[in-house]
Length: 454
Image (cartoon, rainbow, N blue to C red; front, top):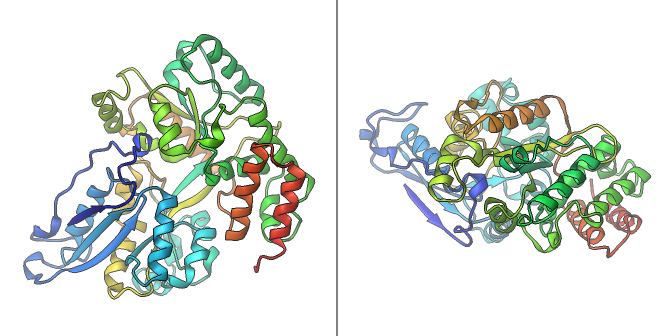
């Protein structure tokens, strides 16, 4: 097997599993292979398929690669870690347009999948051929609904779920100062006040990488669904205008988080990775607005590695908590198929690519990867075992997230249409920077919405 690096592969990913050691090794020398693989001694030449990625992380990928090649010793999976998602999609765009893209395409549902769908092979025929007419029952309903955004022929299939917005917090500091999980915005402001007084070395406020539009969107989608559940999706489809008073109010609440010091100063100049991520690990922030994939840093293995690397001490523990109610409405999260699997329509090795997609969507790869907690299962019948978590706080965090995934998901993280998603990114940053009013940005998005072909 080959593992290559490109671009920003060296970027620190402490909290999303980058320190996980993983286990490598080429499974191609095994005598027997499971899951329909051929006998390795009969293999004379391997089929090479290429895979570019931002996730699974470099710590998680070796185990997945080894397991896949053990089950399929006639296939050589060549992996290229491109970097963070923004860098990845930039490289993918150039690669696919130039006829030099990878065989296996890591994708996101919604705007990104719609942007690239012309380059992707329909997967429904492969699924039906392998799994039968009821193949859709292999996936969670919410996951498959999002995969279908790009058409009923399923250019993508779900590979794992994530939810936002959540706040990662330093549970050791919370315990030290008898701080409880906030239920309201006033509760959160009080926590910020206490920590500012008693922990002068900690940057006041919640850290957020607001420079990256997807981070802003994740919080906004939670806010707007707290105020008026579902309205933003009606606006997305042009059923109501983006200037609807409830949507305008959501922009106002978002802006107030910056104006009132809930978010740390300088947030608009910070990216989540590596800036806020690394500073949180160093203890510079007590709270970090991010997503459920940070559960991957809560395993015993991740905790031990960070202690070994002197990132944290043995008694340091982190937790995830849902955003408190910001407007008096019901707390909620939004969820998405954070990674979906796709096939390059120009691939010359489609059968081999499908084997990898099957492995990562409903096969052994789905089990192995979701157990790292980078993503939560999108396949039916899978439950993550919490015995691998580092402590009680970490277990409570997983339980809380699981409860929300079951009962308090108000909609999708992603918007369907690239034009609207990009306009939303611009709008949120303009409001946070006080460059435009909530009313002005709502009108800006409405102007874009009128041009979208649905």
